[in-house]
Length: 104
Length: 252
Image (tube, rainbow over all chains, first blue to last red; front, top):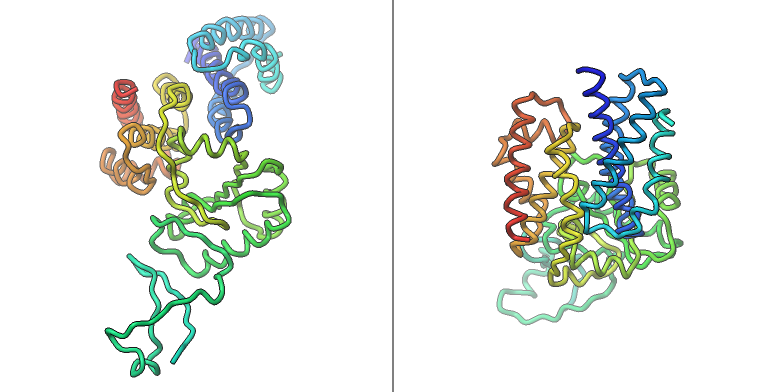
């Protein structure tokens, strides 16, 4: 897999993982939060696998951050069943995820 | 004439046997009165649960008894611990409480029993709501043992937002790769939603039988155990997810 396509895969996985995580936080509050956070964890684990194979330079990190933000915003807008608080915590969750992956 | 005996669980009805030495006094056609002398440590079984071993029953009692110092409304043992004889991963415990948290209960039980637990704490108000709107919660409670009486599942209420939320993961699997167990969980989730929308009992055992029928026994066992699957099998699972998603979307 080329570097470009694996970076795209990483961004895609992160977008979906964060969408689940944010959805779990804003939509259900404390209802079932633990169970639904599993979906986010599963996808984040896949993102970690892809990330470990990559050697990311600073410009890659910048690209991942920007595209992640852009794509996640589009995804969250599509999810009209999620509470609008989703936009308020988006940046914080992106920052957290990138820090865990060493991409901040 | 009188005797005391334990009520035993039959396949269809609970029953009391007449001791052999008393058979001459208690004969077919005689009329008797049955009175509760001592409650059996407060275990309440789902009517769908046909059989449970003595060991599991004893463990259930011990678990519920050990939780007496926690501030909980009700506790349920659910999941594969009840439905599989030996092939279960952990012990799923659903706790209704407005005060406790998962970590505290998990640490306590793991320390006390040295077993792997999966704890889910839900607030009382949320629990009542989930029983109406959530196919996964309903399927979880199709088989249970509880420390208190449970009136059963209420009438289903369709909450499209909640269903769409549950559909996110299966939809994602059409685009991203994941471990085979994730596909198994998603197909189970889709069938639970499908049963919910068709007002059918969200029976986890029936759901497993249906999955096995669709994908075959071998592949069913592989994905249930999170084994490795071929690209062809992976595409088949995606195809099934897509079909189920389409049929659910039509009903929504």
